[in-house]
Amino acid sequence: MNLAIINKQDVPVFVRNLLKVYRVAGPVETDGHFAFKTIRDPADLRLDYPTTILPPKKFLLPQKETLFEFDNAQEFQIKPPRPEPRTVLLGVHTCDLHAIRLLDKVFDAGHSDPNYNNRRRQTLIVSVECLSPCDEHSFCKSMGTLSADEGYDLHFTDIGDSYAIDVGTSSGQKLLDHAPVRKATPDDIQKLNSILSEKWPRFPYRLDFDVSDLPSLLSMSMQSPLWNELGERCLACASCTNVCPTCFCFDVSDEIGFDMKQGRRTRVWDSCQLDEFATVAGGHNFRKSRALRQRHRFMRKGKYILETHQFLGCVGCGRCARACLVDITPVKVFNELYHKKEVGGQP
Amino acid sequence: MIATNEKSLAKYAESENHLFMPVVARIKSVVQLTALEKVFTIQLPQGMSLDHRPGQFVEVSMLGTGEAPISISSSPSRSNGTFELCVRKVGDVTQAIHRLQPGDMLGVRGPFGHGFPYEKFRGKDILFAPGGLGLAPLRSLINQVLDERALYGRVIILYGARNPSELLFKDELELWSKREDVELMVTVDRGDESWKGHTGVITTLFRDVSVNPRNTIAITCGPPVMYKFVLMELQGKGILEGNIYLSLERKMKCGIGKCGHCQINNVYACQSGPVFSYRDIKGMEEAL
Picture 1: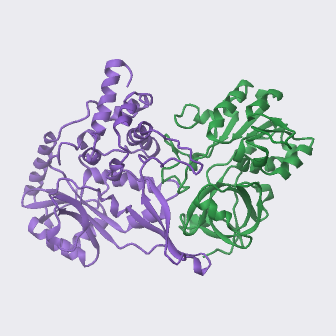
Picture 2 (picture 1 turned 180 degrees about the vertical axis):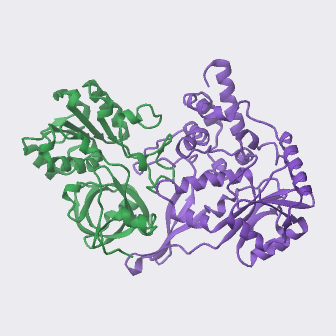
């Protein structure tokens, strides 16, 4: 392990140096919550944040982005989007890091997505080790995302007065040229090891079964009565998918100026929970009921995405549980399916 | 923005990293088929070819209105540098397409998805069962098969539409009905004064057809409500699940397996379909 040490008081120096070269984004406090924002003043960065409303995904897959610009006055002239700025994402928790690894896989698989990949190639990730649960909704330990050994360029762990920095990539190593760091001493390493081993008991397992059994549990659950119960409660507001770090479905739509000539084609986050998500032009809706849409959501998270991309589609960040107005949460849904199966033989 | 060497549209988009950017194509001709459907013959830029398979689709762009997935209606055997789309006026984009005249431009991406594996059908009898607009994608395969007619056994076409005025490609139906090597039967749900043909839903045509189930490939495409009943007829004739092919309609925003709208369980219809064998989707919830 290539380990460096930065004093906490030197982090703003590091950020200030980064700002000369990169767009820097990280968690900042805003109205009593935390959000990933573009950092202008290094003092705003809060590496000790519990969780954010939206995941850092928005810097790789923005809520709305331009696919191309067009000008109908110029005989269908089409221009590619403007290049993205080089960006450093600071303070990414490991749940979100796992989610980004999934997004990388999704957007690179098959037809590689040019927009996502261009942006991803311009982005460096500095993640942070979580040392205590962010709140009662997170279930990262159950989902196996409480730590990460890849996916980051640099990884910070709070060891008291300083951060221990694990260098993940050569780009990360170069990033340290901007940081006042020193080599780790045996004392630092000892401190890091004890902090890392002490953190695990602080996090509860919240699934009542091993997550490796989740795909097979869901395979048995297509006809579960639970989906209808969820459908009765669900408001189809799409808050769950809007805050999810692994949701990547999008709509494509055009915007055009009042002159009806110049405009742009955009892609915008979409949600499988919305009524018209699977409705074709003739009006037929292939997932008409909220029950079917909730089933689709949870099947994607625990089964479909795994089958297609070899990553679980849920990282246990708990954002959807916090956002849901009617208390539909992955932990409760997965546990209930498990207990239905244990008691009645059928989920 | 256009390459000069002869290149397929898909390869061009991939090599230029322009998967979301349509290529500008030109309307060569427009034929009004019914009150709602027109056929557009489309010319890609010089040196570019669509290189499609029957059953594939393209995303058609009307800049400022949006994009819509449209199945390709012409066969590769008759490509000649152009391709045909049969477009029903049913949404914003298709309404905008309907306003186009010869010489006008539109954007094209694709072709997307898997087409029909028709090379595997050679030597076999083929039963086509299109319903309504389902004839549009199947026409691509029908004409491919007719252009290499000697390679196949019987060609049976059972076509149903709601009423005589909604029958598509009437000229071609006329041609097919005159061919001795094509068994064509047409029905309408409701006839009118001038209609002298068969009346009844598409499944009523199956009674009068006998097939060798072990040597027959069945291909169907139509409105979602039709599949259940057509599948019952096909299986009632003993045609094997793996020999029944369906082309499924879904909302498709990207065509490259990302946007999620066309997802059926863990399958993206735009990539793994829109053509599926019944065997592949039989156990899949939400497919039919």
